[in-house]
Each structure stands twice: as C-alpha cells, then as structure tokens.
Length: 433
Image 1 (cartoon, rainbow, N blue to C red):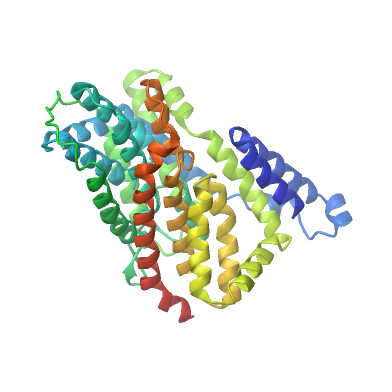
Image 2 (image 1 turned 30 degrees about the horizontal axis):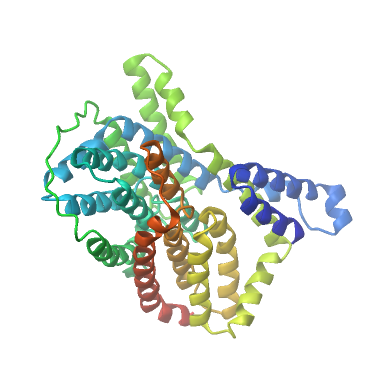
C-alpha cells in the first residue's frame, strides 16, 4: 500500500516524468516477486504473473492507432474536410461551432491531441483573416475533442482501457445488451454542450469568406483509418479470438501503410517520422501502471478501497454511482485520467462485487466522469494543453479563468447529461444481477 501511495504522490508531483516513475515502481513490484523477496514479505507473487498484468492488446492498439493517425494527418485529408465544412458556414459563430463539432466527431475515432493539431490551424487562419482573437475557438475545439473520447473503443486511451478490462468490443460502445451504449450517451451530452457553445458565441456574427481548398494527393491513409475501424467492427462478431486481436489489427494496418509509403518513395524517412510520432511516454506510463495495479490488486489494496467506498455509501448503489462519477470529474480536472481510470477499473469491479450489482453502470459512470472531467481546467487534459500551446506560439497567453469561462458550463452540462442518462439506462440492470 505504501509503495502504491508513494507512486501516485510522485505521479502528481512530477507529471513530466510520470512514465519513468511508473516504470521504476513497476520494477520494484517485479523485484518483490522474486523468490527471495516474496518469501521474506510473505507474498504469493511470481515474476511471470506480475509481468502478465501488462495488457499488450491495449499497448498495440494505442501504438498502431497513433501511427495510422499520423499518416492520415500527413495526407492532409483532415484539413480538406475542415475546409469543406467551413464553406457551408455563414458567419464566425457557426464556423466555430462547426469546427468544434468537426473536432468532436473526428476525435471519436482519432486521438484527441491529434484532432486538435488537425483542426486548430483552420481556426487560426480564420481568426487572422478576420483580425479577431483565436482563443475562444481553440478552446472550443480542444474541449469538444475531449468530449467524444468515451464514444468509441478507439476514441481515447481510457476507452481502450475499459474495453480491455470489461471485454467490450467496438460495437458494444453503440449497442450493449440491447440498450444504447456509451456512444449515444456521449452524443446526448454533445447536443446539450453545443447549446452552451451557441450561447457563449452568440455575439460572433462576422461574415466569413472561404479559403482555397486543401489539396489531397494521397487517399490511402484515409482507407487505412476506415479499414481499421471496419476490421475492429468485424472482429467484434468473432466469438473466440486471440486476446490481442484488436491490437494486431491496429498495428498491422499501420505497418501496411508504412510498407506502402516505402515502396513508393524508397525512403525510410516516413517510417522514422511515423514511429517518432507514437506517444511512447503514454505507452511506458501504461506499461508500468499495469504492473503496479496488478501488484496492489494481489496485495488486497484494490479490495480495501472498494470496501471503503461501499462503507461510506452505506451500500446505496445510487450514492456509489454518484461518488464514482463526480469524484472522477473532480480528480480528472487536475490529474491525468489515464492512470486514474487504470486504477479505478479494478476498484469499480470489486465494488460492484461487494454490492452484488452488475458493474456496467459503474464502468460507464467512471468513463463518463473521467473522460469529460478533464475539460474543467486548462491542465486537465492533454488536448487542452496542446490547444493552449498552439495559442502560445501564436502570441496568446490564456489565463485559467478565460479558459474556464467556456469549459466549466460546457463540461458540467455534458457530464450531467451523461450522468443522468447512464443511470436511467443501466440502474435497473445493475440491480437485476
């Protein structure tokens, strides 16, 4: 328990070296699993079991998707889609709303940071033409990209974590056990939060002129991305498949894209650039956390946390559900939601077992709160930090309050909608266990 607490204190205190902290902590857990130390401390651990906690399906899915997204961005297809969208908008208000919605939709299938990097330049270009501040539009794009992270299996790392832990496939995010899945919950939140954005930008009525369309010369990365999604859907219908099937699909199509580019150019540059764009920091962080969380689970810490939450809630499922959602919102506003979700998934499962309820309600509540909660503050999500970094390079320093004037009403409206809808859809299912 002490090592786990120390690990999390260090993760919070030194965010720039989170991956190193997680890997060192994981190394200590592996060391404790050696025969000498496990016997000395009375632990029933082994090194193969400890390393077996690493979910390679998740690791391969993240790496493969990031690589394919890089090829997709390089093809300029996202910029063309944004241009086509802008052509249909009459004024600045609708341009901002359209870009925010576009970022929202794209990020359901592509990493949130990559989405911001794709869409933000369009907003910057519009602001320069109209001699207006790009700050509000970049904020809207950033928080909208975070919104859809929970919508699909590949929308965000937290969704991939839930899918792997709860054995959910791509289609389960759309329809699960005959009921609307998280995709529709997120869309309901998107509708309500879009109304908030319409109110925030109600005075932005300047006319907008279209710019020259981006030219796309290579459509193959688009086919790769669509193919990845299609194969994940098809794999969801295969009853018995290897545990790393989804990871192999994502990584396999990424490699196909690299081989195709090499055959065209004869240069390794695109391969080097693509592998350079993979977020090894997040992958290393997750790898270490898988081992750490496996260790604390074996030590009984996860069960103890679940029992504590059950006790303070008096065994009331609604209270437990409320605690999980809103504590996730609050904590994700200040800490990275990836380690939080990775830690809380086994806690949530143990809590459901203690309460003797189906864990689906708690799983969906956790993902809703943790994914959307990062939007509350400028530091709560990587996409927000990326958006503010783009603004800083353009000479715009954004105060926390300027960000939160838009992000707080947006986030609270989306989370409240999701919180209520998940309860209405899945509370009876929880009690029916």
